[in-house]
Length: 54
Image: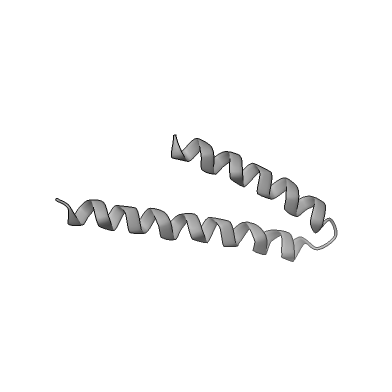
């Protein structure tokens, strides 16, 4: 379920960034990268917590 919510947020983010940075590809990419990095950190933390509980 979380993956679907993250996918939907990412889709909205991409559309918003595309509208805001129509002629600035670097800003568009940086905006996406920030979101992806945050998801990766969260997933890594959840994985570490799960491994610690075993």
